[in-house]
Image 1 (tube, one colour):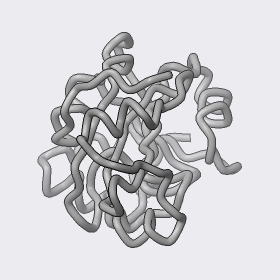
Image 2: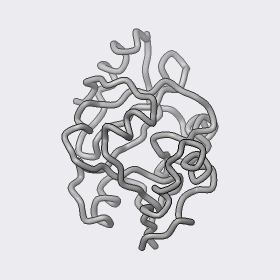
Image 3: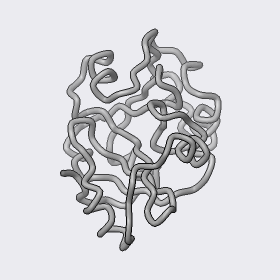
Length: 161
């Protein structure tokens, strides 16, 4: 079901502020949560790789967002090397919410509460369109991956396993 009020209010406001309000009409809401890439792909009817996962890691205790295609896993060692950090771990749920303003399973690629460093794996660019969370686990939106990377302010890297 496509509905403009499906997005989290913070994300809807971010879309307006970024001049992307037109995306609000492309947001799809599902009755069941799509917290995982597999659940989202099944609900949308797309390939798993067409899902954009927004994952928060802690690099030496500092949050960093990694955008990854849904069919791949992040190689934490590659992220560590990319950032020049001593230690990189998955962020705890409370850190994710505090940093982004969203719960795990609904974190969008941009429109966060705080500004963080963003890495985007090049695998996203292998698709014409990717689907990302719209601020809650029930809503997703489509976007060309190059545009998504640009709006997220991401640096393209190779960090998949």
